[in-house]
Each structure stands twice: as structure tokens, then as C-alpha cells.
Length: 108
Image 1 (spheres, rainbow, N blue to C red):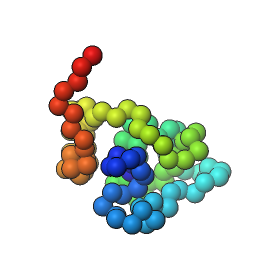
Image 2 (image 1 turned 135 degrees about the vertical axis):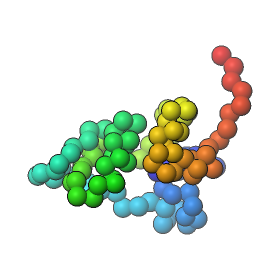
Image 3 (image 1 turned 120 degrees about the vertical axis):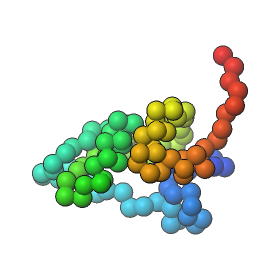
Image 4 (image 1 turned 30 degrees about the vertical axis):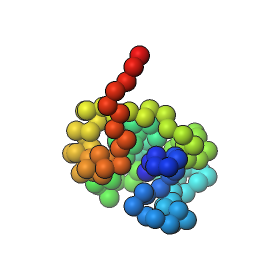
């Protein structure tokens, strides 16, 4: 998970020690010889699929991403209503709402 609180950081914001925030990511290097599902890209669709598949531990899943590491700054920083509905279905919408920065007015 990545979050923006006093600067853009990676990891779990509920863990206060920054050294302990980063969970060990998947193996770097070569892709496993055989998987049930290969997800290419850690964009919204890829991570949504990964979140759904995490409910099925018997399915061997691998995610590959071309970026060399965590994002240094946000990309698509807004969250649509439908996305929040999906987060609610996954059971973590409350956590996203607690960490969100609410923008009440925009000017174009």
C-alpha cells in the first residue's frame, strides 16, 4: 500500500516505525515457471484482480510490473465513487476513507 501523509511514502501507515512499514514484496527476478494466473501491471485493474484472487489461496498468482520499485509520487490521486464501492466489497473502504485527503473544491 502507498499513502500520502507528510510526504509520499510506501508501506502501512498504521506501523509507526518506517523501517518496519515495507512488507517483503514478491520475489524479484524471473517469473515462476508455472502459475495459474499472471497479472501484468500493477495498475487499478491488475491490483483489483489481485485483491479478488487473494481470497482464493489455492490459485497461484504472480504480478509483474515494469517499474523498478515503489512510486515516488502519486499518479491517479483521485478515487471514484465506484472504486470506493469496490473497496467496500473487499472490506477496506473505511481504512481508505480514514487515510484520504478530502478535497472539497476544485477550479478548472
